[in-house]
Amino acid sequence: MMSKKRARSPPAPLDPHAYAKSHPILDRKSTFIAIYSPTIPASTLAAIPEFAPASHRVAAWRLPSKQATITFSKKPASTSLYETGHDDDGEKWAGGKLEKVLAEERMAGSIIVARWYGGEMLGPARFQWIEQCARESLIRWRRGERGEVENREPGSAKKTAPVQDTRSKEVLVLELKERDDNIVALRGLLAEKKAKLAGDAVGSSQSPAKVVDYRGMEVARLLALDKARDATVAFILKELDRVEQKQREEDELDAAFEIAAQQEEEKAAEKTNERAFAEMERIMEEEDLMRQADEAERIERELEATEKASKPD
Image (cartoon, rainbow, N blue to C red):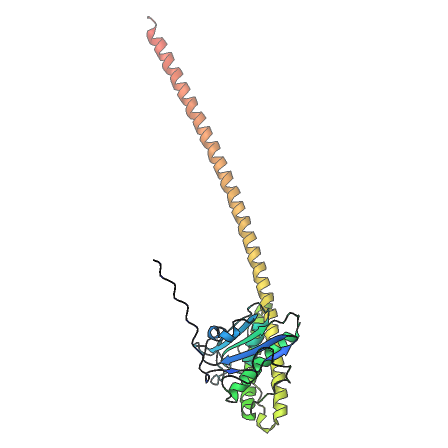
């Protein structure tokens, strides 16, 4: 008698102190809910029973890397490296936007945004709600608000006001100083790549970040500068992508020329070999003809000698 397969046990409930959830956002019958944790893997967050019927479970993660930090300045590095990634789960480009939210909020961990599709296309608005509920879960964690929230069942939410940035002035000052160092490093990297692309010598000098008195500024001004620095970083990264793409195209072109030259060399070598073989065959044929002529002459002489020997004196 065959034994029955044991039913798979349901996943263990999450520790309510290890995650934070957002309120649901409802737009045209589509519902969005985010969950964030600094310690629970994205795969575990995505597997919670509540998210099982969701149409999409978009994931992103930003985890501290074990690699050493690379810095372009002589002072100790103030930045950390992170291993990042995302999974769109069918919602194209959404995972990258979640990954960007984690980076902008300087948060390490994993985040999931579940979407229940309501039957109507939302267009770009869906990215606004994905980012908004993601930020709310991060801010709730920062505030110490753990676990579930009230009225979180799909369909019970309404569009909410944009989430306010609650970072303290001290945090903003530290982040802006770190961002300035990052911008200097990125500009140095961009200059190196542009010089390499142009075939110029790469300079080793690196100007330090300009010292700015952020502590003497109001929080509103710091927030505005934070957005401006974000725009600067985005622009430099876009330029890096453009230069790297141009470098890849040139490398591919160089590789194509190299392959073509190699093929021409191979063809030339093949023709040389063919000519050499033809010359060798000609010489061998001539030598064979000469041997045949020598053999015929030898036989003729032997016949003459035999005839002379057979004649009576």
